[in-house]
Length: 261
Ligand code: OAD
Image 1 (cartoon, rainbow, N blue to C red):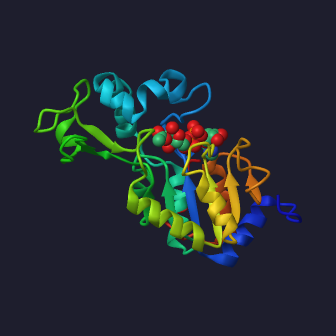
Image 2 (image 1 turned 60 degrees about the horizontal axis):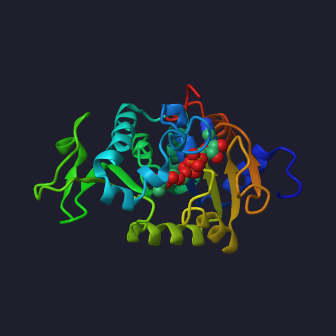
């Protein structure tokens, strides 16, 4: 932890105001308030579905219909979700020039839905389906409805264009994420347990390149206490709203100040 700073919110806001080129790394925790469960923990997706059976490329190739039980649930939960105050708060931080990009491990599209412009989707997204045999792509809504397993024109079962365990990170997203991490002044890490590689390397890359690392998470993570300089313990929506207030005091007119956190 950084020494000094008796008020971590003010300390984090000071870093953000000083650098004005922050990059954000987000994980499932930011979408919990939108009704999308996170992965780890008692209520998480992996308590219900063993990721080795449901979330690896190998499992998909062996038993795609079984893996679609989990994928269908994720698709319908994501389809019903709307951005929450945390997604809107980050979009407001981009709009006032404090944050310049978000690298997200989430596949729910909620940063874009909240109006955030520069979103790097590190694990792909649920909007597209891909055939792992002929590589043809489709819009998900054109091929999938609840209770069905979507098929390619070639007859094979389609896979959402998301990264399953055992698949590489999309090349461009990996390049862009590392470049953002190497060149930002502050990396804001929001709602991730930082247990999955290579996404969990991003904070280390930023730190080694000289950035301050600010973490927003109600819990301790693998980053807390070593990579993290300032840990803001709380829900993403609450903490981002507090940061916005610090960074734009008296800005009553801002139409995108989050509410309902
Ligand atoms: P996890 O479920 O591992 O971690 C979610 C984190 O969010 C935890 O550290 C929680 O403490 C925190 N959290 C919960 N509620 C929060 C809130 N309201 N505000 C802020 N933080 C909150 O999810 P990820 O770290 O995103 O990958 O998981 C990373 C990857 O593992 C996923 O992208 C997925 C999964 O397996 C693949 O499937 C390849």
